[in-house]
Length: 225
Image (tube, rainbow, N blue to C red; front, side, top):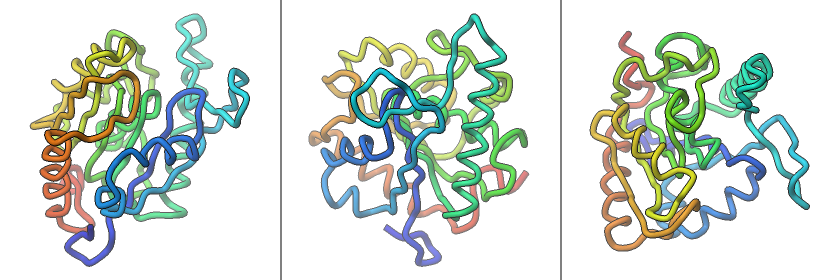
């Protein structure tokens, strides 16, 4: 898939807690080839190693309520890494996140609109949120940088994937939908995972891809502010 300027849409991918960019890339292989080939996916590792897995594993932030300063520090460093990556390898059109990475992906448009993140790059045009929720919602508190990320409705196209049996993200993902205008939703029967796309999932995905390919190059909902 290419934008109206003839460039393939580029998407920054943010993995979940305790995993890596390589792991998320592997998990996305459950999606059909024509979906994966529609965009240029770039996978990166979060900046903080975790020690709970026998393979390279990282986290984007430590949201412990007992140490707000550490939460703000780790979240801020991740924002710096994300922006540096987008400057170096961009321009990027959208952001995809899974689990902890999805919490960040969902918050980025609002943070960028307020000028507290991604100030050196073009406006994000769309997000894909897989098994994620709302920073400041019922599950994960908001760090200082993101405390107003959802103070206004997010108008860019968004695709939200979450499962009936996802005990971690089902409620937060449902809460998040109310912060986006006309979200595309793939609600599947599985758990905390990147879902295979059934007939309905493929239909929703196709509609979402059609929506984002019509966005003019170099523009996002915030570029007019």
